[in-house]
Length: 92
Image 1 (cartoon, rainbow, N blue to C red):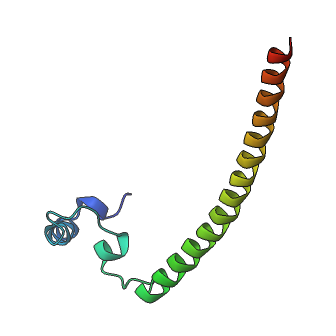
Image 2 (tube, rainbow, N blue to C red):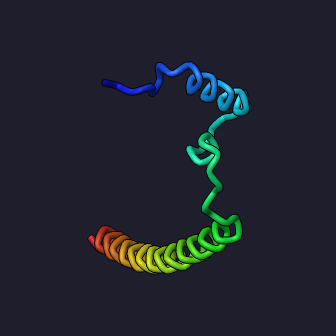
């Protein structure tokens, strides 16, 4: 009914021999475990990483510039209100 599967001694031995090769590893991929070739090319990974980093810096740079402009405006407004309050206090 269940077929051989995990109860087959030859499959159990094969699985154990695969695991021995990964002793001490922090992580393994399913491709590495099953002996399949990795589909990702390292150069492509760096290309994607580089473009993602550039996009992040571009977006962060624009956001940071907007935030600095907003803070500068708020500081100017607060300074003006403080000056008005001091003038009003000293004028009374």
